Image: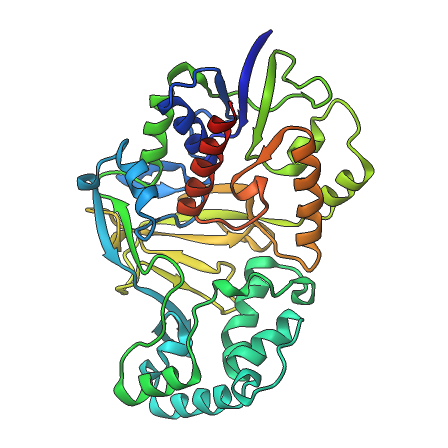
Length: 402
C-alpha cells in the first residue's frame, strides 16, 4: 500500500500539467497512472513513414496563452517549434474555400457568391429575429440556408453520426464570428474577413510530432509517472485506487464511463444516470502517403459520400514529411490507410442535457475530494492549451490549500 496526497488518472495534457506543476513546486507525494506505454493521451504521436502522425487527429499549439507557452517551453524550448499562420479550407462545390466559409465567400465564382450572400442576408440574426434554441434552427438563424445545407449540417452529421436535433447550442460560441457586413465587405474587397476563435497562429514541432512535448514532460516526472497502469479498481469510499494507492486527492482526466465501470461500490443513482447519458464519439486516424495539391494545413470535408470529415495535410506542417491523414467517425469507417489508429474516446458530444449532467458529476466529485480535469474530466472539447491552463490553475490552487 502506497499513500499519496495526489493520485492522477490519465497522462494526457491536463494530467501531465497538473503533476508537473506540483513537481516543480517541490510536491513529491504524487503519482500519475496512464494505461498506455507513453504519455500524451489524445496528443500522442507515432512515427509513420518517416514522420509523425498524431494519433488523436489534428493537434497544434495555439500561441495566444503566454503562460501556457512559458510552461511548455520549459520542456521543449521555443526554438524547437515552427510557427504557422493557419490555412484551413472547406471542400465545397468542387473547390477549396478557406475557413471560415462566411468570411471567404469571395473565393467562390461570382454567381455562387451572390447565392450565398442572398442567403446570409435572409438569416434570422441579420433580420433581427429571436435566437432559436435548437441546433438546426440556430445554424440557419446564424448563417443562412445555403451554408447550413451545403456545409454545416452535412459536416456535423458526419462528425457526430447522430440526430442533430439532440445537440445543444451553448457550445456554438466556438464558431468564428463573421457578420453579414464583414462577409459583404470581403466579397467587394476580395479578402478574408472575421476572426478565428483558435489556432489562427499555431506552433508545431520542427523535428517531431505534437506528442514529443508531452513525452518530455512525462520523462521529467520520473517514477511518479506509472505507464501501462490502467485503472483497474477505484474504492471512492476508502480512497483507494487499484488496491494499492491510497490518496488524499484524486484528479481524474479519464472518461467518466471508465471511472464508473471500475468503481468497487455503486455510485449514487443520480451520478450513474448522469454518466450513462454522457455521449461521445470515437475517431479513426488513417495515414496516406500521397501529397495533396493544397496549401492547407487541414481541410474540412462535408461531402457525405466520403467517410472522413477532416484531412490533416502533414506535408504542409511537419518539416520534411510527406502524406496526410484523415479523421473519420468510427461508425462511418469503411476502409483504412497504410497505418491507422482508433480512438474509442475522441470527442465529447454537446447534447442538450450535457450541462446538467456535468454539473451533477462536478458537484458530487467536489464532495468526494475528486477534481475532474481535461477533456474527459470536464466532458468539454478542450484544446490542449486550455487543458494545460486549467490544470496549472487547479494545481496552484491545490498547493495553496496544503
